[in-house]
Length: 218
Image (cartoon, rainbow, N blue to C red; front, side, top):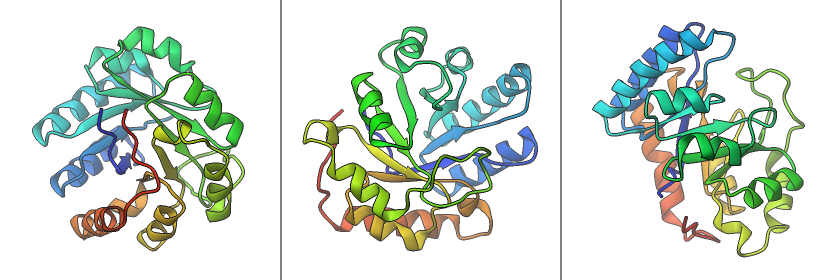
């Protein structure tokens, strides 16, 4: 299955703002949306997920639901992303089935190897730097942290796409690409101002202009 090199993680003060931002990103060419709503009831998240699914369907974009495999199944989302304290990926796969995407969050080489062993389809590794969109941040990795972790993976392990996350902006992408990161996940940066399409195009160009050190085949 194809894992996007540019992933948008929704943000907003209300579920409606999340949906408005998802609409903006999709209208400007975003092809991978992660609905990440915190501090709301499951009922409210489900309502938002139904609407997010309709938006993504309109633009042929993939929809990933953060934290909630059962909601992902109810709305027929493309998959789920699981944090370090969430359900085990193998359990989520049982709920969703083998055709759905399972992503996981990592901060250390141990986290990465554990997720690979559990068969995730991609790994969100971070944070790159401090970000206000997530509470209780794990230790900051920075470019050297990514370089160290990737250097410790063998050839087979590198087939699992690793997505950098955490306060990333356009100026960071070239350095992340050079150390072997497969892609980036962004949130507020993409929607904080106009030019969303320009940002997406520039990021895509960086990842496409240089042969990757590895090319995931999952």
